[in-house]
Image (cartoon, rainbow, N blue to C red; front, side, top):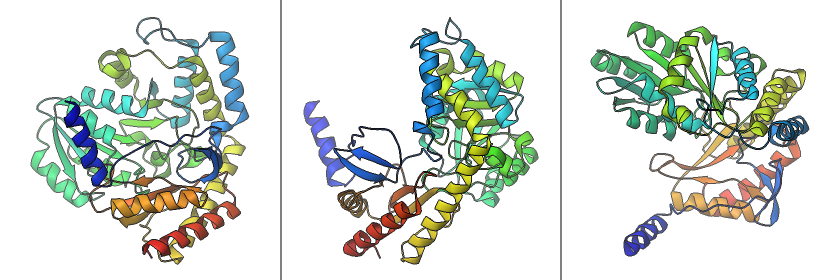
Length: 390
């Protein structure tokens, strides 16, 4: 067994796919101390800079003093506290849904929800670039997985005509986490109606950022009432931790009774819940509007500057900006060299992305200054030229 583990690790290393962690020793701000040195952070999902916002930390501290450090049990035992219901009420209002249910993470939400909606004999239609947690949920469900080409709704129509004979579910990221592009939810709604299917979206990277008051992709595209399950997370633009499902009251009750990741896990602690409540308030305020405006301006500048240098930047408009390099080895050389130049941007390789599409996944934050981003573009250009990427 030990030799097998060693050989597997050697194979991973030789393929340029060996992963390791870097150690951050301060708050997730635009600049962090990482592995003992200060660097510009360009790979965090803390899009609005709320992770070190005073209102969130104050709320977390106050909740800890009042409620303690743990919920003590799962939600269906004694682990439902006042703050759980307050946060679910806040999400219901924020997402404009009939009801909401909290999960412990985005992964827990997807692997819990999907097996409730589909099982053996059913079909799940999934975008080929959906997040791994969606695929995990489908595998656990036992339903037939039918993947359609990324954002190719004509092909999805053909596949649904062929396979959607009984219960079926369409699942898609709303904002794709590695590419930064956006699904056409109106197209998915039309297909859902045509084939009598359920529609679930994962809006982890759109919540707090897109649409009026940051309500997300469904609000941006005007289809809130047509989405059966809006899943999203608190650990990205909302600066906290955990996930939620915006659903109907009946769907909430079904998930409470059937979603295993909800039933069989100690619920989120008070500090996290309180921080999330504060975050939901902020993103709907004038401050939230200003943070989104700054994020949008930063994103436009950064995307245009990299494209002007000749880098392969796929079309998109969100704060997720991939720079395609193709080779896993080149990607990690690029990432390591940038770190030495004071810019932290993690390389993304298979199996996170398809073979031949390795990339640096830059993420812009509202707390970046234009000087920060100009400095980053300068360093990226220098390293890119040295490695022959441009």
